[in-house]
Length: 243
Image (cartoon, rainbow, N blue to C red; front, side):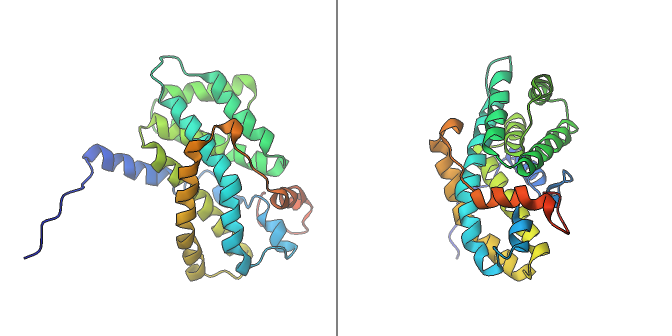
């Protein structure tokens, strides 16, 4: 006779929230994610990045870019969770302006902002969410960009997702999109791509956990090679990606 196991089933509302988070974190969400390589195309073209380099490269990418984006995602999430009636539009603008300042390559900065704007617009099409409307209006009034990680965090908070789950989902999506770009640029098969993403999951958890210890202003992001790749991307003779 098998021993009875304690039930750890989610409530219907938790299950629904989980499904909605999976939907919004899907790399196939039509916001343009698959059109960007964030400088990787240049690195591959210059033979500075090969398939054998990807595990280490992606680990470093998560530790630098991932930490910054995870911290921004959390701060934007918490903005949407405030009990105050009035949305803190000034802090929303600060978060995005800070991200803009740290994205030194125009191409990567524009790509992040394009995806963020598209993501926020897609979420606004799902229902009437006051926080999201006010965030969009604040960005327009201040001429501030809306970056993808901030938009994902804000939407996740407004829709009532769990904070750490939302950060994990964002980091996983970010990693999956970059690996997908590598598949189109390198001799990287589906099996190897799946293995790389699978092995990257502990690093995703580590970055999401560590991001709880930082404020956005204390987070660092140093990626000179990727920044160079993004800056040089418009000069490539042939390009598969927008950035």
